[in-house]
Structures are given as structure tokens and as C-alpha cells.
Length: 86
Image (spheres, rainbow, N blue to C red):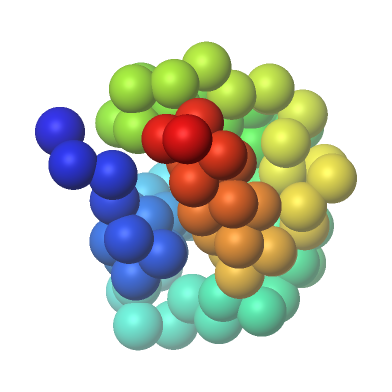
């Protein structure tokens, strides 16, 4: 699998959150904190696991507590994937 772009990762996360939260993905603001959407630590850990599976890498379950928005997490992941590709 080719390394996903920031846009592809963002799209995946928005669709995932929309499904998880029962919201239209168009209503997900990628600059709003996961906490503001009511994402608890268990749901955030599940998201990290599923995202890691999709990316083919192991992600820390607490990643969403350090990178608290979709945008921040996407930026971190893009940098991480770029470093791994070197």
C-alpha cells in the first residue's frame, strides 16, 4: 500500500468519527478537539487501533490525548510516516 496522504488520513478519520458518533461526516470540524465531540479514552484507543490497522503500523492507544484534534493527529501521522519511509 502506498503511504496515504494527509487528505486521505483526514478523510478516513472524519468518516470514522462520523460513524462512531452517529454524525454526518460533513459536520465534523477537524480543528475541534476529540473531547468536545465526547470521545472518551476507550473510544480514542479504539480509533488509534483501527487507524493503525488501516495504516499498517502500531499506534499508541493514547495518541488522541496528545494530539487532540483530527488536524493535529493527521500532521503527526504524516510526519511519522515520512520518517518511517526514510
